[in-house]
Length: 616
Image (tube, rainbow, N blue to C red):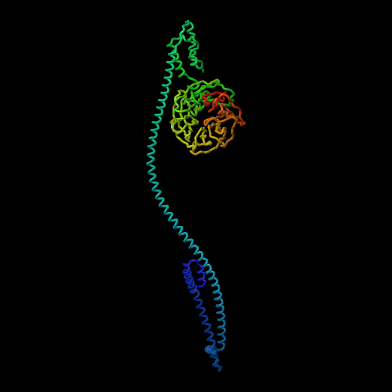
């Protein structure tokens, strides 16, 4: 057993377990030896008793032989005889033999049982040895696993200590950062208060500057008026005396001409006939001055309206296709870049490189100069009416956008902050918010009540035009892309590539389609629900004349209109996708912009040759 245990110990991999196994085997041997010691002693006693009984029988037989005169026997027989003599009779000997045989049989039975028990114990001992070996193997494996777990425990404990140290350091950093935050928050609040104070001062300065400029413009107008009056005073006037009965009629006619019929330009007919020259020179000058003041103060269909009339803006059921030129005039001193109809379709605004915005009263197929908005610091690139029609927003070459109030021709705000030419300026849903796009690669959102920019978007490329939806701003760029910007997210939400530099954008009244004009001489209709190009319009002869060429939808979204570099107007049918008509022969230079009245009755077009054309 010790050898088997030693052999099992030899199968262990580690030397440190050998001595432990030897000690365990020694302890097992001592334990097993102690268990079988009593059995061995009893077995030895039985053997000794059996031998003693054999010897006694021999001695008895020998003693009997000696007494009877038999020859001497071997010692065994002598012993038996001696025992027989001692016992005294042969029957006793037989009895003893029987008892001895029975005792021997019992001993043999007990010996067999003990041998079988020893065999069973050996089998159990071998099973226990195998189980012990298995347990020792498992113990060795578990000991290795315990060692690995102890190593992992030490590593985790070290990590916990490291994390504890880092936590303490981070806590200290947090405390210091919190203190710095509180300090900087206080500084920020003080800076915000200073900013508000500076903003108030800035707004006051801007208001003062606007008032000063308006006064300067008013003084310039008065100076021009005085010069015209002096010139009129120096002009010789013939006086002819007429009968008294004709004076009353002539005065009535003069009175009627000076007052004018409703919707009629009274200042164009200050004298109805030559008989009016019968007035004296002083009266002539007074009448002329009064008529000039009347021109400055009189009302018209746009200058002094009540706001309620703009709540009923005419809607277009079906746009009228232009077939003829209703009126054409030379509107500006240099090229014209922008044109836009007012919401009620009665006024056409045009802006050009001469830094002026002219308002034309449109009625009966005719354009009549109504007002001029002065004070721009640069050439006009775009013009926009607010939803009520009371204000005009324009983008200019001098890196700013300006806001005018129409009824008194006074500008209210100058929106500064761009670092390059402002190419587009649009109102949002109300007149209190606006969006501007510039070639400085930014789009800015403005609060017009404060005259301040509240958001700047970096748009990655020159911005040539912008349009506004309910929650989106769409910008067209020099890098041949159209980008969509969410008002609630500073990131670009969608990019649609086109094949040319984008020159203009126009959104349909239902805000479901977008019309873009690009330098690849094509118009593209984009589905704003799917964000893909739905239609592409091209025509033989059509060529985009500049980076600022404007194209528009008709008010009923049935047609797309644009002007070409050859001076013609091209009009496509949205339903069929084909060219509906082209209108050549009026403009002698490239058409920069077109405008379609919200009522659908008129179309306005402007070109580089300073011409404004009204189509009907």
